[in-house]
Structure formats: C-alpha cells, structure tokens
Length: 173
Image (cartoon, rainbow, N blue to C red; front, side, top):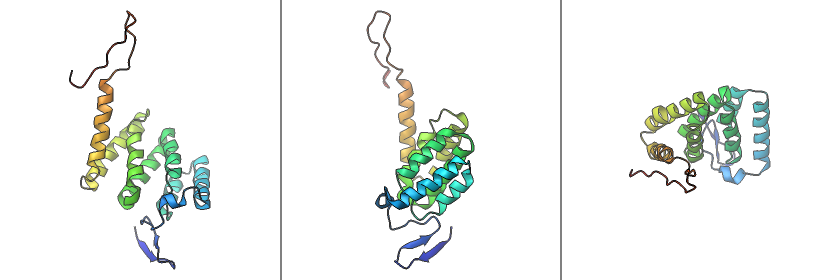
C-alpha cells in the first residue's frame, strides 16, 4: 500500500505503515475507545469487509483491545472469521511491530472448532505466512504445531477401574 508521507508532527501517516505511536501508548485512551466502538458497530451489523478495511487503514491498532475483538469474530466463524484471517495476513506482512499478536491470533484459529475456520488458518500459516516472510515465522508456527501434536499424545487423566490414576503417555513411549 501507498505511504502518504509524514504528517505535521513528523510521524508517518498513511495506509498500513508502522506508526511511531505504539499500540500500547494508546491502549485505554479515547482513541482506542472510539476505534473499538466503530469496530463493534461494524461487527453488530455484519459488515465484515468494512471492518477489515477500517483496521487496515487506521494509523494504530491497539493491542489487546482490537485483538480481543478479532478473536471473538474468529470464534463466530463464517465470513467474520474469513475477514479476520485476511486482515491478520495483511497486518502480519505490513506491520512488523504487530506480527506477534496477529500470528498468535492465526495460530489460535488453527484450533477453532469450525473446520472451515481451522482449515483457512492452517493454510494461512503453512502456505502463505511462512513462505511470504521467507521463513521468519516458521519457528513459532512449527513450535505451535509441535506443542499441539504433543498435547494430542497425552490423553486426559482418568481414573482406572480400580480407583488408581492412570499415568499419562509420554513422547518416549
């Protein structure tokens, strides 16, 4: 996206650029309240693409405020989840300071109960993010996948028929 240059204060302005004002500096401020109110209204009337476009253009995305709202949209599934995952891709690629929370958002979506959302999130992680960023995101993606697979090897603890606790499986078994 095009950068519109510097504003009067010397700060960058424009589309999907990193802004010198950090997301944490604006957490809990009137800016964040107004942004979350706008996003909430767009969510309430189901304007997913408009919500995505707004977040793609705002000068600062506050964390955790915006990411919590986006997690709720992913959990809603359908078009909302798709719009959030597309937005996450755009943010991860264009706003390096926001990569970690948005990568975490995508990784959480990989475990969504909705198979469509889960599939889109997995494809985003494996086919696009790791490749587009030339492996920069491969370590956290691989770590998350490995942790998930290890968790599947450990069945939930349950009481044996004799009342004793069964031991958990280990990776060495």
